[in-house]
Image (cartoon, rainbow, N blue to C red; front, side):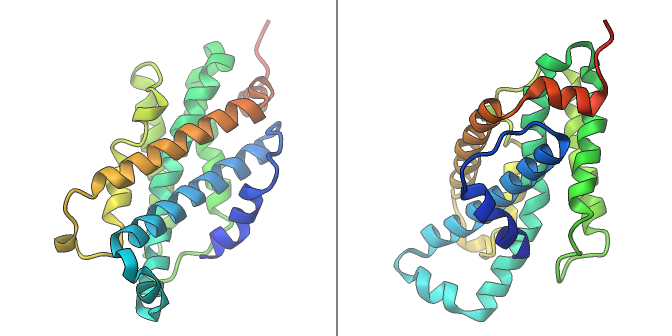
Length: 210
């Protein structure tokens, strides 16, 4: 997964301040990639038990795993986008209604960097953008959801991307949901610590009128 090859090493380095829209785009992209990568891979490793090394060495499974990670990425990106929108509402103040459209532009810029993943429809990235658009639009019907609740309902989409036959899955959804929730809470803490939220809002939406 080229996405992870590029972004995961950066994610593991010393945290960098998030002071511009470009920084924000990198943060959202890398955290979404991390969620997609780790939720799928770690679930499969746990599910395979002591046989995980054998399973992961099979070329057919490697291809299925790579495809699954890409398919999970749009849902993970939409989850991260909702978290960021909620964190930016307070500094946005009366401008908060503009956040969904502004963050959608950030998503489109990130998605445009990548080719359509092998085995995916030509509309893969258009569909990803639409998913993010829908999730961000839904945020406007009320106050921000608690971060621990944000993975629902898209955690179900991530779960459905696991490269294991549904007949072999039982009550495994909770593992994916809890993994996403735990790591989204961490991403939220990191964002609050690293981001100049007022500067980001001004760049995204324009300076507030006095």
